[in-house]
Amino acid sequence: MPEAPLPPVADGPAVWTRPEMERDQSWIFRFTPSDLAELATATDALAARGLGPLEFGRDDFVLPTLGPKLVGLLHDIEYGRGFVLLRGLDVAAYDIDRLSLLYWGLGAHLGQVISQNSQGDLLGRVMDMEGGKYAGGGYYEQGVRGHRTNAFLAPHSDSSDVVGLLCVRPARRGGESWIASSIAIYNRIRSQRPDLLAPLFAGFRYDLVGKGRTADELTANRVPVYSWHEGLLSCRFNKQQIELGAARLGETLTDAQREAIALVEELAMSEELLLPMAFQPGDIQLLNNHTTLHSRGGYEDFDAPEKRRMLLRLWLNIPNGRPLAPDYADRLNTGGRGGVTKRL
Image: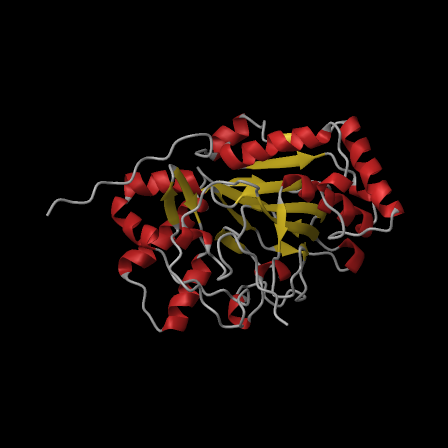
């Protein structure tokens, strides 16, 4: 019986390596003084009206010249290299309430904000809420989300088209953001271990680790790690959730399945593919979850609460975004591109 033909090689700007991105840093967008003035004016106008995040939309946050620039950046995130870093915002000029207004306004220009957790939060705070308790890992097993710890976070993608992180304060030491092209990883696997593509395309039942309607919910279907659909390759990956899902089902992953997910993680952390970013206050990182994996180094925080590491996070869906296969798009049992179910 003839072997099944290999799926195609992926190409385009979303296939990149660390050396390429270090040579060409056009992925860093620097706000101009005019951009910053528009952001301040739009934020002040909403604050004067007494509005908060969730209470206004794109048309209320007027950005005459920056708005069109954001549309161009969004196209680069969706169909280009898959990420951008916005730099130059002076977070010291804003208290946390006004900074949240500003960030929500930016998000409104980029897409539809979806919920990130079972409390229905749309604007999340990424900081160690556990007092260093899970610095060594093991947080998922205790029902704790990784962004609420100071632990190393392994390469993964989130359940939205785009994830946005605004750095309010970096850590005392560590906490770097690491990203890698999941599309470049696919090409490496196709070249080096084509036999491992089958389990990645077949997919896995993920443990939703508290992001479902119940605390112990699994994805209803097998979600592919890689999915070709209408000529585009997309990736959804979280090794820990895959392993926990199998354990909850009482299943043992096959050798091929274990090798496949281990290789994705290994390549994502390889020197050739992993691009490090040390956040500066005011940096805004925007990542396409379908083409980029992200991870984070463990960190040591300041003792004073007002100095501790804090990022603001948005999960965004892009209007008329890339087409996704149904079994890939439903990652949280809330339908295609659905957010986390809010529990009552």
